[in-house]
Image (cartoon, rainbow, N blue to C red):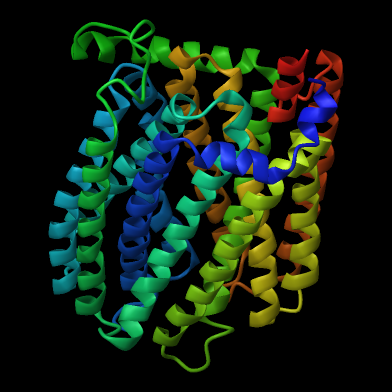
Length: 455
């Protein structure tokens, strides 16, 4: 079978091939249930700080909140990858969710009381950290439930449906706050507590759907030894993971491109949060902005959903590196066209395009890491990528806090960010395209894998 025959197959062929895999359907169910709970919990946590009439937060406080929630795990993320390559990933999926469910309950009690204590933030750190551990484990397990030739479609479906579930969780929480509960500490606490139900359900589905070794790591490549020995080798393992990623040039360029996107996205995210709280919210009451920003999450979810459908066929036709360059440049243009008028409806268009681009880049990056990196390094590589994913977002939010006014409205900042996106697109097109032409395949996308299989 020729490469052209493979790449011209309709997208429905790959969709059917993925959906026929029972393991993939169950793994995706585990992800969707847990990420719906993430939307409930994280939406309630953010709402209790950002959109609660009992307290207000400025740009620096919002950036600091994201840093508190994301940085601690990010700093130890690569070390966690060593354990992803040692422990059964089925156990990671179930145990992480059970522990999260147990920790959400005391956090909810603290939110209920409106206490300004560091304890709920510390507990939230653990919950968010376990969430990243859980998602990295799912990504590392995906190649065990689908064939390499359908990885791009599998990542497209799993990642996008997970992100959409997260957005739906936020929307459901917002709906509960606006209709059944109240915009108060008590309302947010009840929404946060509801997340525990979904974490437990996800743990149950993961535990009963797979055998102990079904999700990897492979028994032959799994590192043996005590936990203390594992802790002793984490630094060496992380360095080995970085070297392994650096040797896979196509994947390394994609990780760099995604990190650049996230850095710029951090500024845009903070600007949107401030705009929805101030410029787009009439009056002094910030409670109304919670429902408005839920619409932004919905627009972003639709963008992610569209990315899941268009990314697989486009990358098979033009190559992953071209698609990544296109969406990077498109994001810059969308920010100029939809963002500069500072209109709440038009801004939803910028959110739509930005989230579509983010999901498209993530699909191509995850797929490249999965089929380029060896299984014994895969957990570490995904943790390294996850660390860059979080660190650059927080860095971008701090840049935004230092450059944006308290209202978030700055035409100059948006123009600079848009220009940086276009420059990032040109830079990645040069690096990724040159490497793809040098090796004779687009190794930064599954199309290259399909070509090699066809030879």
